[in-house]
Structure formats: C-alpha cells, structure tokens
Image (cartoon, rainbow, N blue to C red; front, top):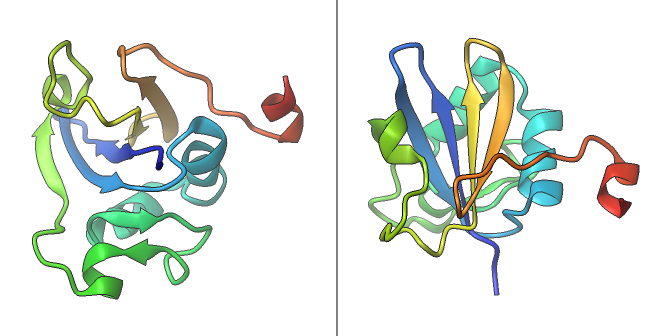
Length: 130
C-alpha cells in the first residue's frame, strides 16, 4: 500500500494550488523531501506545475509525474480555497493521509494529518528515530 498525500502552496489570498502524490506521503518521506529540497516558492511552484506525482524525488528531473512521465491525462494541479484544502469529516478524500502546505508568506512547510491536526516534519535522522 501507499501513503497518499496532497502537496499544495498557500497564496496570499488564501487560495491553495495542489497536486496528489501517491508514494511515501508520511512526514519522514514526502514531508522531509519537501522541507529539504523544495524550500523556496519558485521551487514549489515549479514542482506543482508538472501536476500529480507518483513518486517525489529530491529533484524535478528524478520525480515521477503521471502526466510528464506516464502520459496520463487530467493530472493538472487543482485550485481550491484554504478551507476546502484542509481535511474535514466525511471528506471524499479520506484516503489522503497527509496534506502538505507551503505557506508562501512564511516560506514554511506545514503538514496536516487526516484529522486536520498539525504534524511535525522531521528535520534529521534523529527526529525519525524518536
């Protein structure tokens, strides 16, 4: 099984642009990769511009995108409001275990679990072990 996630960016007007990511969506996987390698607004926008992701890597070139690399259609990023992006009870996206949100104002990554609670993203190997 895969740990599915959404990866999004929060704009100043509270609009969120996001994509689906199929593999390794847990905080020590996708979360850590985002924090360490996609830490500038332009990096995040570039990542999202390729649409839905099968497997996130440390570079755009090595990341596997459904559209670019598998020629699948309807894989574009989605635009919603901030409130629509956050998990809610009875959501049709109940299979999404984590939602990552890059706040362009603070240039920080946030991670929400299925219940809508903020989850810490590990910053080093010791955080993963703890």
